[in-house]
Picture 1 (spheres, helix red, strand yellow):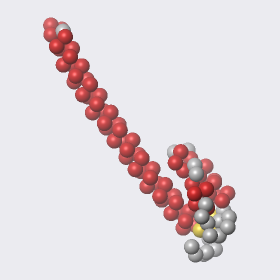
Picture 2 (cartoon, one colour; picture 1 turned 45 degrees about the vertical axis):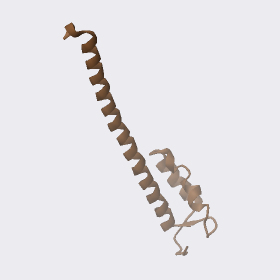
Picture 3 (cartoon, rainbow, N blue to C red; picture 1 turned 60 degrees about the vertical axis):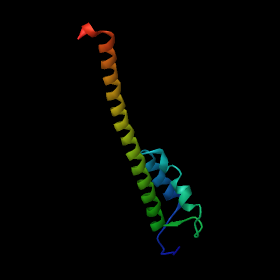
Picture 4 (cartoon, rainbow, N blue to C red; picture 1 turned 135 degrees about the vertical axis):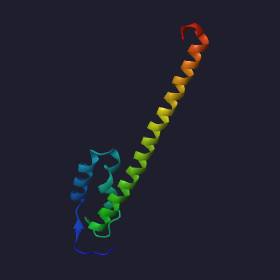
Length: 97
């Protein structure tokens, strides 16, 4: 890692983590992850911080896609259940139509 003089302190990383934590639990340990293997004791370069944030955003996008897919699956399942209920009701009570 190259020291360009632009470094980020662990306190700044914690602050970024706390501010982003309101968007999801995945970022809570970000500061510790980023300065866990720091070559410059007590600081990280700005590029490393941005790289970590981009990785987090990509992971969050994947999770968001999975949650969205769950919603679509739930909608499809609900439609099937309604269709089954309609068929069952028709079979049990044919005169109620």
